[in-house]
Amino acid sequence: MAADWRIEAASIAVPGPGQFLVRITMISLDPAMRGWLDDRPSYLPPVAIGEVMRAGAVGEVITSYHPKFKIGDLVQGNFGVQEYAVSDGTAVTRIDPKLGTPSMYLGVLGMTGMTAYFGFFDHGRPRAGDTVVVSAAAGAVGSIVGQLAKINGCRAIGLAGGPTKCGLVVNDLGFDASIDYKEANLRESFQQHCPAGIDVYFDNVGGAILNTALGQLAMHARIVICGAISQYNAESVTPGPSNYLALLVRRATMQGFLVFDHASEYAIARKRLAHWVKEGKIIAPETIVPGKITDFHEVFLRLFAGDNTGKLILELNP
Amino acid sequence: MAADWRIEAASIAVPGPGQFLVRITMISLDPAMRGWLDDRPSYLPPVAIGEVMRAGAVGEVITSYHPKFKIGDLVQGNFGVQEYAVSDGTAVTRIDPKLGTPSMYLGVLGMTGMTAYFGFFDHGRPRAGDTVVVSAAAGAVGSIVGQLAKINGCRAIGLAGGPTKCGLVVNDLGFDASIDYKEANLRESFQQHCPAGIDVYFDNVGGAILNTALGQLAMHARIVICGAISQYNAESVTPGPSNYLALLVRRATMQGFLVFDHASEYAIARKRLAHWVKEGKIIAPETIVPGKITDFHEVFLRLFAGDNTGKLILELNP
Image 1 (cartoon, chains in turn blue, orange):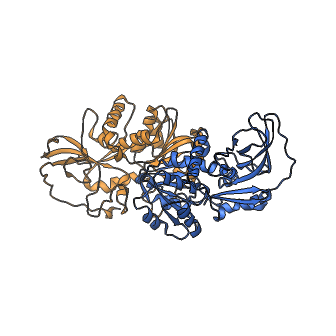
Image 2 (cartoon, rainbow over the protein chains, first blue to last red; image 1 turned 90 degrees about the vertical axis):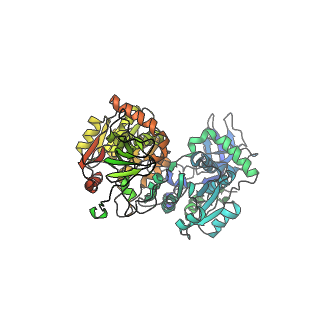
Image 3 (tube, each protein chain N blue to C red; image 1 turned 180 degrees about the vertical axis):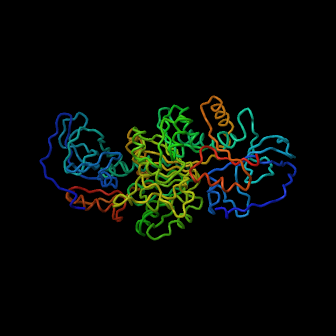
């Protein structure tokens, strides 16, 4: 809630030797950020009370004492929810305008695209002809996964909430079919759209949808656990997937992954994704909300309200 | 319950051309048999009402019109819960006394040993030095898995119920430690015995133990879903593992498998297991109960009462 955040004014930090100063223009909003707020061990330490909120962002270098980053460079990095950030260049990517726009470096060419690419190819291990089901298919990651599935010769079925998103998924993103999880009988819809079972289930939501999907697996299916947005705000322990023994019956695999483990391969994935975008094989939906740093909380909540499509970005003082 | 079974007397079937008749001497009792009784689709069709109960068994060929099986041959096959069976040789293995005894062909050299071998090596993907946790460690499969882990240079931690079984696991089977799941604080015990986390969790029981183990995974851990004996007799839907998002945090894999898929490799696995038994590196605990075919139901229930160790076998009219 709003009271959980504090806006602090501070003088703009001065970069030291080997550092540079970035004026942030766009901040990435991702469901994973919700997890970083929980005070428990995870793949990254929790954001401590009083710390700047962790976030991916893009901006322009406006002061530099770093040999590789020059004034005027557009950069993407983990700059946090702030207007200016000092960096020593760690995990900072210089934006190549030939590959894409700054917002794309937060989306299809950034963490979102990398998550879709490595989650789908490395962990989903798709074969042409496979039936691939994606939850949160209108979201930043899911939208890319479905299009990668099509490029890979698979059938892509997208789960989304409401007719608008379901229309986007099929008409704009080119999925073969969509399922409105708010309306449909999920089990019957899976049986209708996946008559030979689900080969790859790419899960962003968890909960009942994951459990129902487990009941519809094809032999040797792969379930990729990318996220579980349905559970991030749960007040109590949410039920696990009681159908997990389907893994045994179907000789299936449920695997979690983190995009950070693939950092050494980001560059090649980024080039491929940029190429597919240029070819028109991938459309990267974005919701860019103009605003001020004080709007962060409100825009962040859109992720969980279910009314956002594609990559959600707060554009600062455009 | 007893009323769910019917004992039928019938004249001994006469084998036709290409068939042979087996006098069954030992019947294998396995937790998986419980699943075959549920009237729902699974990896094998349910045993229909009125059908002979499906079961592995060993016996002696007493009549034969089959070119490859001779009178006097000892054989292992899916002969069912009966005193005599007719077979055409499908999925029948001739017992090689140089490799082991008939009861071993139901246990360490049979389905049990194959399940342990392929589940552990192919799906657990162990490396020397890994910490391997096995549930139902005093059971027919778990006892073998832990000993394979030791042969493979791993640390083996066994979960079992009560001091007798826990003693067997450590003192006779050579596990590095045991955890009495009925007494211990599971989470603390895992932390004590697996200070660097669990690399391979070989699960035969499901339920709360699986869920707690999920919270203690090492990076890139492999969870092998072999069975879930704690759930087979559940009257209602049992909860799934709510900690499954640990798969994401730990980049871990939860995989189900069925031993039947490895049939083409049984022979080599059987030779290796027989070799390790001869060397004394594997002890194959057995509980052989002498009785009549009418004792099947009572002996079967021992699997679920938790008072059985190792391979449970009903020896007919010894």
